[in-house]
Length: 271
Image (cartoon, rainbow, N blue to C red; front, top):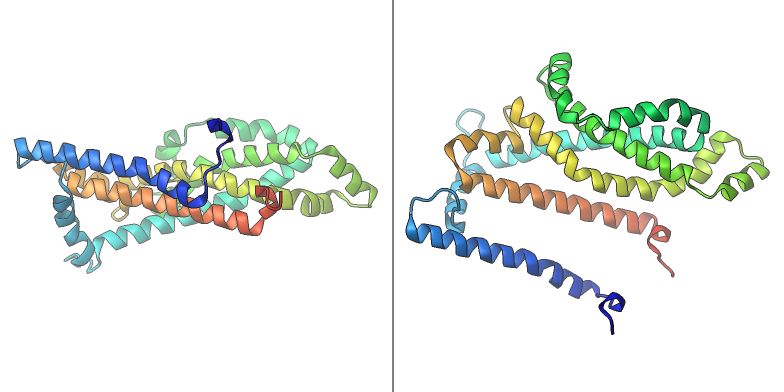
């Protein structure tokens, strides 16, 4: 049987997906052991024991100034900012994408503007946001929204505009107006695409969040990474980066499950 015709079961898929990660971990441990054998004070590739020691204080010992557990306070602050940014961007993308996708005159008028905003590097707007909105939470959330919402709007509007014209004609034949077409025809078919767009935006959203926290913040995962880098504290940086990756993976898996359960027809269920 050709490889192109082989289908991998769920359990085998998990095992195959875990294999490269395990190999990378083993390669890292081997390289770290080699460096520490040559230089026991090496900070570039800390051993797992060194990372556990470096993270212990952040995980279990309250900060002397705030009384908080630093690691969990950083995680909570970042997730709050990320969640708020993703929520606003998703709601904006759904509303604007529906209008642009269903109404050609509106798409012709505002489509170029959305495209122009989408191609501007959001990081370039960071100084403007901090000047206009201050150094508080608003600017950080705004950077996430500006960074991912226009791209999501373009994708969703294009998807809706490409819906079969026969569906629109049939809905009008049954007496549907533009609002009803938007809600009854376009919206149900846009939701799986919206979830997919959110999944694709998770990576950029984390980049914008960490960038904002690194420049102006006193708590957060990105803030902590850039704070300890001046001390070459790789025993803290690597676990923080791994934790961010794990959070992003869990979010992606959750979105996949939501999409499959809420919209099984969009995933070929029953075929």
